[in-house]
Length: 212
Image (cartoon, rainbow, N blue to C red; front, side, top):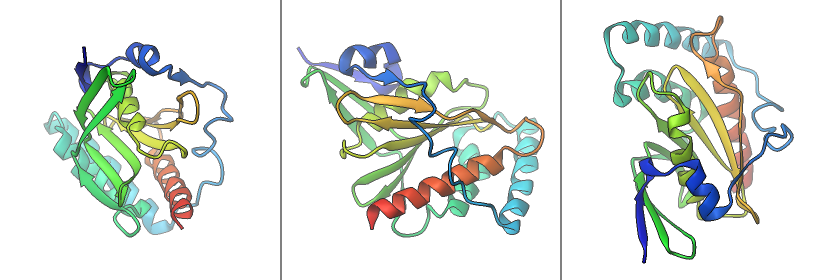
């Protein structure tokens, strides 16, 4: 009997059982968030110095629903990283369906923001309500990355509740494996958005080269 499961109800334990997904803690597995990060321009730094206080100011007066989160923080980050220009384009909240266990389990859900090139899924961003821990979105993000139709190349994601940001990488050659970057936090001293933007720009470089 086919079992249909909502993406929000899936746990990492479920994914381990259904497809054998493995967490990799060897830092060599996910070097893309560490190596060859591009420098930021002075204009990019200037804009990021505005984004952080704008976010903190709005947070004082609002619970920051996902639409506000995307407008205040995610949109400028994606723009500066080049994800609004060819070969990329943005599709918001597309439906996806993933079959596991030889079609016996079907997972359905919607992605908050998906950066695409034609039918190639490049970056998934799962935007959770401010105050919700990122751990609550990890299984949902992994499920989305598993649904990438190209199993031969790594998939990347950014999980955020707009105070915290964490990048993810998933490979699907043989056994699915995944890893996390460190946590970037807007309440840390300085401005962790610098690091987030540098990683986004590096991933954009990698993906453009892959699409040539």
